[in-house]
View 1 (cartoon, rainbow, N blue to C red):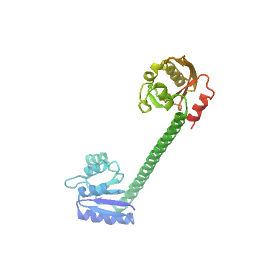
View 2: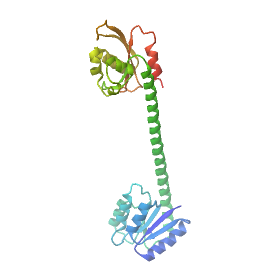
View 3: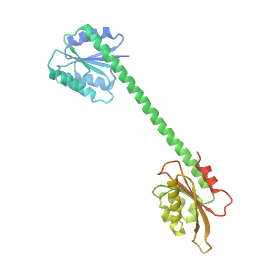
View 4: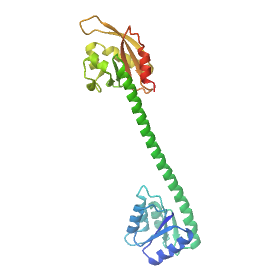
Length: 282
């Protein structure tokens, strides 16, 4: 339903404008106010389509009233000012305040009808656009939630798969800090699993003399944007060096995304690349 507010300190003007407007926009809800302050309360509490207001009113001019209405970002109504004044300063002040149109007093019925219909059509178009924008914003917000949920699901999935691999695995961020490590990696480094995320990869791997090769593998996989393999060995402990292959594979296609590193014995029968693919393919 169309809602129209009429604001004027003159009871005669309010009555005349109400009668004329009611004949133009049948079925509209028309509310009249003697005080601009009371009208502002109605504006903030509702969503009017049109306001017809006098210009010269005590305590608040029509321009000041329009300016205070426009200060509300959710205000979309058109404002028509009725005035006996003809000076340019009055017109400019009202236009700068956000007034859509003017009517000379006494009001010509036919002119009022034309201007009311024109500004109502414009207001309805603006409200339709605003509603469509709100709907689009809601849809975008829902899309963002759905994307976040899907990313979370895939992250949990690949981490579950990586955690089940019997060889040491970690995911390293662009700043070379650990984003994820499986139980085998924690066992290899004698570190607590829950303390590994966020720690420096080089700090954790330095005692095993694997830091340099891990950095090389991470940098090469990030640079080439695909899986790579580097041969190395662990020199720690009292036994003979253990020959390893470091398999590095990016997660996604972002240059600053995580790189998964898998440390597998050189003579491993299972294919580490296939295990990584099973974990990282959506």
